[in-house]
Image (cartoon, rainbow, N blue to C red; front, side, top):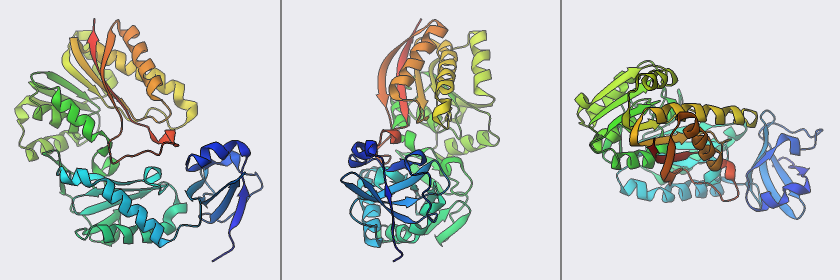
Length: 380
């Protein structure tokens, strides 16, 4: 093995490293330090010692993998299996689509693995972790003998490519999943249990689902007995994809319509017209990619939710989400309070949630808790 370079880190990092934080940012590394991209490093911070992969390119300079030694194939395989065992309740519930490995949440920083039926979609957030993939792939195959293929976007890493019409099951509903071309590898898996909650509150309601993508929240609303559901998204081909999912799940497509439009503009138009719904769902994409954009994101959430509240029938419900990691749970709720003031409404929160079982977060890694989901009654 090549000689392992060592970095002495600032003492101020020791507490969070001891608590298990998996990232070391570039501004905490000595400016003159140089290493080969993807090289293992020994990390020292006071009495703490760790081992991590060097990233020569991004804002995260080192991803910490272990404290005692450089991880070998056996350790990586053990973490893959631990991830497999954690998701057992999902398999028992008949869910065939879930996140098998959630990077830092499963102590494999920079690597995510989603399982869709008999296929796996693997993604990395830095090329520095690519050398670990053979061991991870071996671990995946050892856990699940039914696997037929492992892909990384357009590349087949092992086995066969998944079919374009792959169908997965989620709590009794069926969805098409495009592993090699779809956003979020085909389905937004982190909202699974939040969709199920929407199902439980949809009976007899008129529903507006904004940023609908391929209609997952809409399917759950229909399944829950919604009187009528309107899905809105600006993306091309999404109306057809949502219709296909509704047909797959044998739901009543006559109670659903898809509007291809900008959600901000449509909500503003509906608010101006006085058109309201018993339940409005807002699940937008992230509004910030870095800390510098945090305040702009909070303002965007306030604007969006103010429009949404104006489209809720008095006494009706708003189900709203944020996947912006830079916006905390409390900051998101503050944005909702600001939205209520802008709209002349008050939001009575009745339910809060975040990420499901297959998106775990180490206690010492608050950045990993990115998803916020709030349901509230809108009062005039």
